[in-house]
Amino acid sequence: MDDGNLGRMTDTIKKPKLGVVMFQLGGPDSPEAVEPFLYNLFRDPDIINFPMAWVARKPLARYIARTRSVVVREFYKVIGGQSPIRLLTELQARKLEEALSADFDVHCWVAMRYWNPLTEAAVEAVRAAQLDSLVLLPLYPHYSFATTLSSLKEWKRVYRPAPGAPPEILIEDFHTHPLYIQALRERIETSLTHFDDPSSVHLLFSAHGLPMSLIERGDPYKRHIDETMQAVLELGGWTNQPSTLCFQSRVGRQKWLSPSLADTLPQLGRAGVKNLLVIPISFVTEHIETLHEINIVAREEARAAGIEQFELMPAVGVSPTFIEALSSLVRSAVETKNAAPASKP
Image 1 (spheres, rainbow, N blue to C red):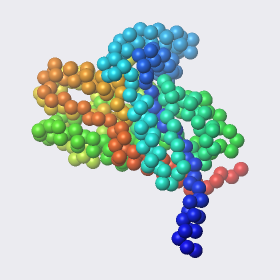
Image 2: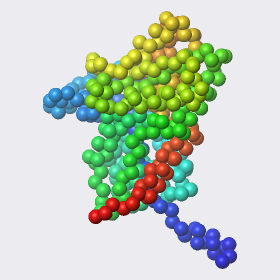
Image 3: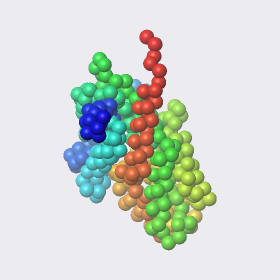
Image 4: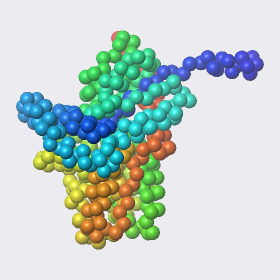
């Protein structure tokens, strides 16, 4: 067989059709979207839940959204009038397609929980795609009832697979995946070069907060955060460097994970910390929590506390190592599913 025939035969080999749905929280894409975004967020039963909440949830969510939107809209105005999370997540999707394209005819869709593109849009695309494999990939490294579970519940509510559709392959978390840990290490190492003496820097890991009521119900989020932090410190050789874990973005009066970012900064200042690197450990893209809450509000609070150099580690975003981590997760999940013996009828 000559090389020309071999080439033509290779060209006719079809790659398996792979779909990947990438779940994220989403964010308002205009000032007018802030209030409906907040309404969608606070009417989620995985966010607001209490006895007889089904009666009061929607009116309460409408009230919270209306009252908070005035302030929150100003926060978004400072960072450009909208959340960058859709653009950044779509970019991650395109990079992941590139990483998987050698072995799959692949398309990645974004399914945002609280704003466009909502889960329904991803469902319509999946139904039309005639896939061989379908992977569900929440972009929350750490599993939580309020993020991963909420997104998957919404998917199950909307998605009804057609006859012959491939079974869903779920990736629940990746909080200790070696390449994810490596991506965090690389971001930290680069950020530490901004200091004259990296060994003098206090490492402040900041994660999105969570109500303690969820932790008490068995939510593994805090444990996952602890395990990620420990893995990063060990890989980077920073176990002897001063470090602290705190939480941010508290809403409402109920008890949340502590200590908070706002409480931690004055404490570090009183302890004499002068050089601080904030590591947004639970965020894989930039959005309001990093761009405003940390980079603007926390920066000002740190300065007031006497901290002289304040640096923010960029989120892992589309770093090659992080995209490689996502690609590895998807490949491994598909291979494991394909290698599993078929169940008996």
